Length: 176
Image (cartoon, rainbow, N blue to C red; front, side, top):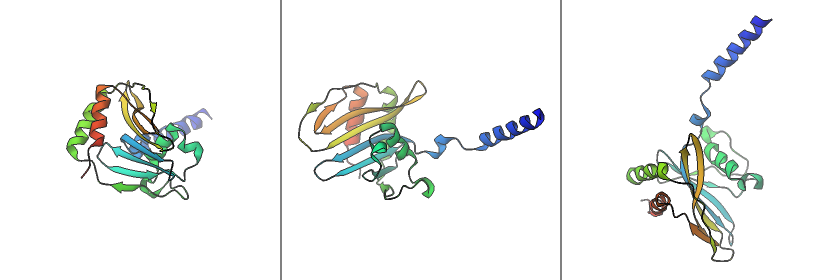
């Protein structure tokens, strides 16, 4: 009996070892910008991947319990529509945008390790304009972190961290 259990455990471990790591199945997102419009309802996210790929996702048709939870939104953005699987009914597939040129992409990647997670205060600016949020994703102490760098719209504010300031400026440049 013990030999049979040991053999089954060994086979299971072999199977687990052969399965590709989840990180290889996910998009390697390093920056994301979310645009929420209140006057004309819109909710889109543009992601920037480590290889320069930019994708636009329409979140309007996502369940509220997903789109109001940053961790679940990030999981959705990393996995939605990969290899034609994981599609959610009524949610349009991501749209591929012009890729980020190599030089600003390299500058963005150079700033990410320098980033310090820093909260900032926002001030109320306008009524019902929606919001534009800029996030950076980076590795620190072996953990994946997501931090808000800038908010614009109904509330306005941005991080004073020098690396965050450089990332904000790099993301504001037009992509041709």
